[in-house]
Length: 326
Image (cartoon, rainbow, N blue to C red; front, side, top):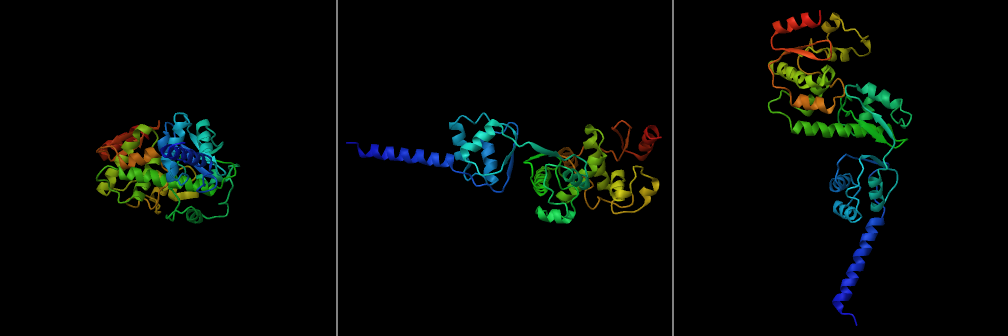
């Protein structure tokens, strides 16, 4: 006759095995369909489970981690972009991310693009369902839950993977949410004493830095010049803002009369930052705007090879202009 403790132990063991089996094979509820998530290179099973829990796919991250370790999947995760078109079990999800069953379609958002260029790129992508075709820019912002009234600069440049037939609204939303995350992270880690009062102002400056930078190594110095000018109350006097203000009127040749014609974006006639960003800044531009070089330079001019010559005085700047521009 079996002793009661042994019977209880066996019952508990059976219940535990049954519970584990139920968890491993039960379909997970997708937060949205399709459910898209990224698995970055070097991601651990624990960090992946935590992100999936925060995204609403997993109820308990530790149980998913435990299952993955028991099955020997912890060291087999493959980086990539994943798309779940229908509910899968935890066991199936582990198989998917350990085999690298990533989505195939993708679109790239380029640093320095305007929102118009972004819309054009998505509109011409044959793998995307064009739900924004008849929407205004403001209506797109409303559909993706953005609080801003102007779309420029709000979408993070990156490569986005998606299932064929996905709505362009989903891509806009992902790019918007990614920019919000990156901008907030950069803002919270910003250098002290910057002449910017909000994250949005930082985004504006980053967009200007993005458009002015021809060589990556100059990016922080260019940001330093603009920060110095803002601190001194000097006009920014940057050509890309004027060009943006001209819109479709710009024919590729910026003339002196353009610099003298006042628009909301003409930093030769108006002090301070422009009312909105002028392009989509990348992460490097965000970092430069919020961690500018410590410099006394107030001017820079293109050397003609993509790099810039920086000067601390107008006299030195004029000499540089004579050397490189005339």
